[in-house]
Amino acid sequence: MTLGGIILKKILIFPINEENDFWRSSNDLLNNVVIGGLVAEKNSPYIGKTYNADNGVIKDEWKSDIKQCDEIILFPGNISDERYREIIEAGKSYGKPIIATDEAWINIPLECRAYVTKFEMPHIECEIPSELHDIDVPVITVMSLGEHAGKFEIQLELKRYFESKGYNLLQFSSKEFGEIFNMNLLPDFMKQEMSMPTKIKLFNEYIYRMTREHPETDLIVIGIPGGIYPHNKIIDNSYGELAMVVSKAVQIDINIMSIYCVQELVEKDLEELSDYTHKVFNCQTEFFNISNTFGEYEYDGIGMQYHYYEKKILQSFFEKSVKAMLFNAYYSINVKEAIEKMEQELLANYEVI
Image (cartoon, rainbow, N blue to C red; front, side, top):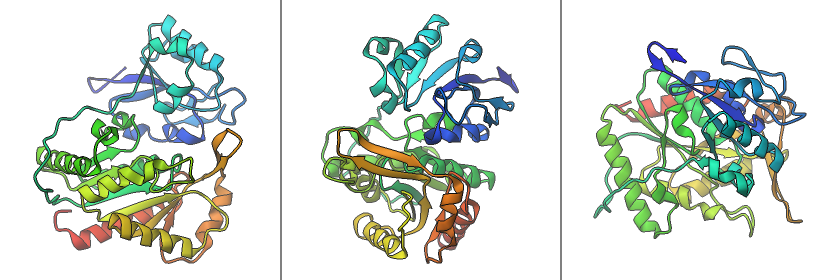
């Protein structure tokens, strides 16, 4: 498919579900890519829903779309080995490249993996600086209490808003497929075994170098994978290492915290979280995304289980009077108001923006 002389790659997404619903409404942010098909799990409530690529309709079969697509992307879900095997065999028979996220890869049958590739973090060579560089561009970070907390939806909304206002973003995705949305990926050394001081210096050098390569940059946005502290003794979220590295490598101007949806949320919880980020990451947090997700750990071997709430349940949170700015990127509740407030804070403190 071509648009204005540019060849656009058509991708097929499987499965579409609550965790990656953003594919339905982010066609405007795709980078030389169009949605060639969204396929849901069997008996999924997503079957029959539309998405914004030529008013497409979500199906539970891929035969009609797989022939026309250029690439298949596999995501995690409540998918049987046989279901993954079927789509991989279908893609293979039509010669379609298949790529999987890290979470999906774990569930792909071993005998099928030879035909599937994984998204990879880029290998970046950086010299360790003798001292940290000053980064003279404002920085927004997106953190969360753990996985599946809606960070990527926030990053998409930040990109949509600031670029629509004419700002030049240097954006780093918390997801390994961020390049599809014209975001940069975090370098592979961020997940390599090395001392934290070394990792901090390398990331500082990398960001400094990127700002010199892109002197037009008005704003840096960094999505930080994982959580900021352990969920329990088993789910440790790497003890918030990545958030620690980023916060020590760059000065964070605005931090957004995405938290799980819990009915008993009170203002004291938000204040304690803000105090924690101030003490540990040297950034005050006044913007909170109330995700549509609730995560709980099952101690019978199942591990973390995530539940997704409808918009009407989340609405009650936004009726509470709290000092912090609350929003929900998944259902676009208070999103514009929150980002406008961020913009005003940056304009008040930075001439560059």
